Image (cartoon, helix red, strand yellow):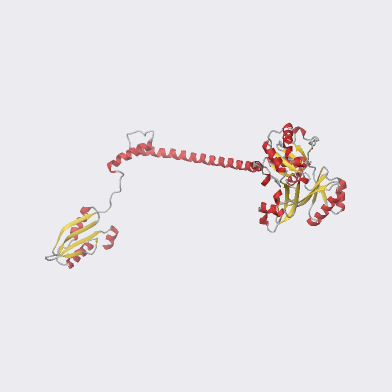
Length: 471
């Protein structure tokens, strides 16, 4: 039976054309008892059959002791400090789709780590986990701390600290879900070698991951049948690397499978780690954290640090641009101010040419004009003392007997001291002054020893507004 045409056919090839660039990252494929190196794809090797890297086997308990051999193999293959990623085989990890009582719990990674303890046969203290969150569930992947921590520590001491530690299957899946043409909800079967990776993708992120043996067709059929019932009939099934016989067998079970464009497994791994190395994407699952972060955890967040550096550089450029514009404004203001000062100096000192430093010269001339009394103050306003005295003398009554030996004027204030024959005479003098526009307090009188009264009057000249009101 011929393969059904895929609506997203060609999306992968277009993505491959967009990602043709100089490869930089190296990949260490790690199994519990073997390791392989996947170097960057050489430009001259494109379009040619690729030789699989040699597989180096070792006793599982001696994983940390493999660091010298791995480092030597890197150097021999031409590695010179380029980014290094560690890809874990499926049998190195445990994965589970876990449900949570509240979505907020998905943001608490340590709480989710202990939550996963109830779904896998490992103790929370013995493993490191990461997750891909969904609404009320998450795909969680865990790996044992030992002996992986020992290997990472030995690689760090040889300046070969990995930037990421992730399952190989999820690194390849990241390349699969990157094209926008890929449906956000679908199931995926991807065969590589003698293994098949089964995924259920929701909103462009994995929700279920199952590792299957390609030789055991029952496992594949069981996985597809169960997931087909759970996901419903409207979810497309995409396949990669499956032969026609296997596709026909799945169609006979009522599963509508569609073969996607050809994408080599190793090419997908390279594209993913290259994008991670340059900070273009972050891995779906990164186990380079907690106990596996190492003594130099900065290596694990190198892409994020690169983004911070770029942001800091852009911010610095923006600040420099703003300062440059502000400097131009200040320069223009300075030129305008100098022109105005020059015009003021020429208008004030007609016979003197403008000096080189105009502002100090103007300040010096201003200081000379101030003289010895300091800064110029505002002159007092209002009538003079002579005018106040004349108005005061004119206001004093002339039809009665009294003595005024003391008259004092301070600004607009007046003070009178004298003698009268009675308190009524003192009140009459105050009334006369008020009629002339003075504000006078009630007179203060004191009986004299012989006869009469001593009187004192105090007041001030009314303001022009008040005086006008009196008139």
